[in-house]
Amino acid sequence: MQDTLETDTDAQENLRQREADHPTSLVMRFGMESPLQLDGGASIAPWQIAYQTYGTLNADKTNAILVCHALTGDQHVASVNPVTGKPGWWSQMVGPGNPIDTERFFVICSNVLGGCLGTTGPASTNPATGKPYGLDLPVVTIPDMVRAQAALVSALGIDRLFAVIGGSMGGMQVLQWASAYPDRVFSCVAIATSYRHSSQNIAFHEVGRQAVMADPDWLAGHYLDDGRNPRKGLAVARMAAHITYMSEQSLHQKFGRNLQDRERLTFGFDADFQIESYLRHQGMTFVDRFDANSYLYVTRAMDYFDLAAAHGGVLANAFRASKTRFCLISFTSDWLFPTSESRAVVHALNASGASVSFVEIDSDRGHDSFLLDIPEQYRIIRGFLTGAARSAGIPGPTPFSEESAR
Image 1 (cartoon, rainbow, N blue to C red):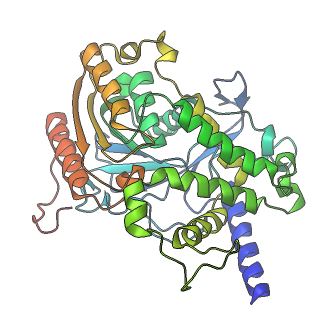
Image 2 (cartoon, rainbow, N blue to C red; image 1 turned 180 degrees about the vertical axis):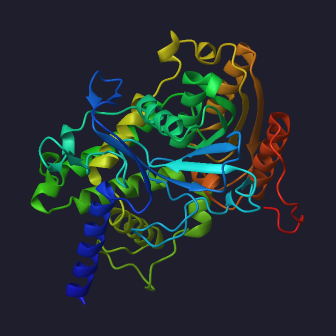
């Protein structure tokens, strides 16, 4: 049985490594003549960005929606992940008749810069060495990720996006898009996010990074050269992060102090409690689909994000005279990106004269609410996009029944 598990793990790691350079999705490649300039002063060339599309781009190219994924997401928003075999991470939101309706809109979702599923990242092959970049890849930022997405959108021949939508780190990208490319975005939906990463969130990320780097298999970031993987360190990082995605109430309701497959305490350090077993499972399944160095890069990108600091410390300056329509959503039990963070963005948008609507949804499921089956979120996003599409002159979809509406 152990040999079988090791074989399965090796096969999945090989598949993940193949996806880093040759993804099972569309890929836009940019050569030496099109370097990607980074905030840190370096540039990358050649480079590539992996993406998926859903629906049909209309003749005048006005119905495109860019969906931005969160920290450990990917481009497979509504299609099967080639590494895990699981459905898309937001398939209940994106698809025919869903709130982001692919019978009406052309949806684009790309893997972020620094990711590990086909966009240039630390697991990608460095053309200068023929080996994975590892830590030789320059550190990337949220603006760098958006700059790469903008290059993709331009390469697809789309001058202006109808909407940019995302939650958590995806919401950071949404706000960056609205600030950096106001003339290229008609509307934005930013969910469970903030204009900057808090010191508490930076602290959680640092714990995760240190767990990865303390793993003896990390090898100063060059583990792929040696056919190794800091699985234990990355699993611990994921366990710590996963706690922040849930609320105390949801943890208590789901697990309480229930024991795991036993009637009494063992007085040892095995997983006595269900919550311990759950976190261990989350950690070990995560390492099968994600690259450890990518985890370092994308968490660092979130830590560096501060839209106000980039505009003289005044957040409203980031959206000055913006004509983009905004919808912001937060959740009552989200302590990772609390409602106060969204309200700060709303106040800045109001100060800049932008059109903005804001809803705080009552949910006891924590930060991960935006990824879960929350009917009110579906209604809000559907309603906002329907109204915005009407203003933009985008024809309506095939009528749907109230029973099928999410």
